[in-house]
Image 1 (cartoon, rainbow, N blue to C red):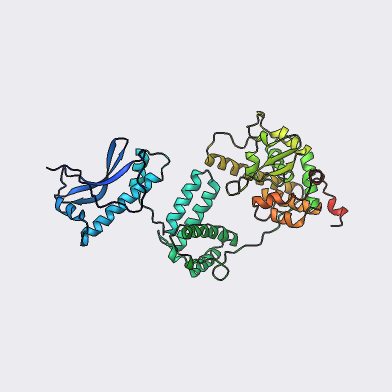
Image 2 (cartoon, rainbow, N blue to C red):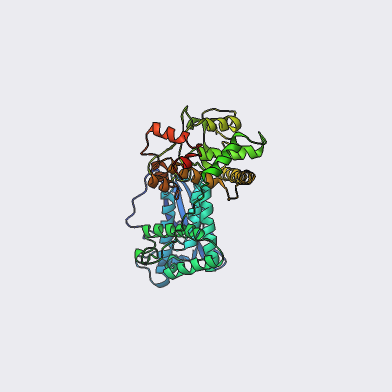
Length: 437
């Protein structure tokens, strides 16, 4: 019997750079050592790297005669299609190899036998994006994309949705379906912004033509719900500050989580995740400097937020801070170094839940009938800064959707001395009366 390696010499891939010496090479081969039950022999992909060759199945089997017909210069009819399929298999193998930082047999086999992704499919794009976000440790955003995908899939009632089918009418029907289910427009906006991002990427990658883009002023406009004010008036803040200085149960869980809420208010309205991520290296004698985790991966430049370190903040850190105050230690013991991104997210969510629980209890005990949450601290800080004379436009932008550029900008026009004067008045809750509010 003839040798079982018969290379298809005419399957040369055009317009592709020849592999470097350190890179694997590929070819299509015909394994004629043992026939299948139907008398045909399997066609395989052979990969050679550092004098080692391994073979991978193609799900194609041919007789020696048929294989020879595939291998002619101008294959005809069904042989032409088989030749096209084999070329595609080898191209895909070469793409896998080109995309690897360093070649690994195990990684190549995993990717080679993975189910091919149809990039025209919206849900496949969602899955790829979710996996990418999870790998980067951006668990919260990955969860948002997962919820959006599941919602749109439930609406569509199918396992597949192609970009070509996402029309203006589709988006309008989805919005109505969500509202009819009692969902807020905020949720609709959040989900459809993920879809728009995927759509933009599909156009950028050449998967879908831009002329069918369904988003825009003359097409479908994603709703932008008005942001409801959540700030507390000065009299209510004054009651909470009295509680801060006179806690009925010192050392209790109630005091701890309320202190974290008040720390958020004093520290530029910092959110719970950023509180959890604070390290002692972020603190000097006068300031706390941090970057928002929410936007740190999307910011083009390393813009930092600087908060004045007040005596009340020092007191909270001394009371509840990590006793191991090494520079790389977290200031508060909400999360620990070495924990997975998923574990840290769960710990932060639990801390946020506890803050909301106890600050609402404290507010009720102080005679405040409003709904108070961790967001209230952030909005109250912004409102107080407005009352103290900070630039209204930059403060408004800073507390809109919390983008990093606007978060930093709201103090940019105030010098360092001015920042401290403003910060030290954050607990002067009679300021409104002085200004006639």
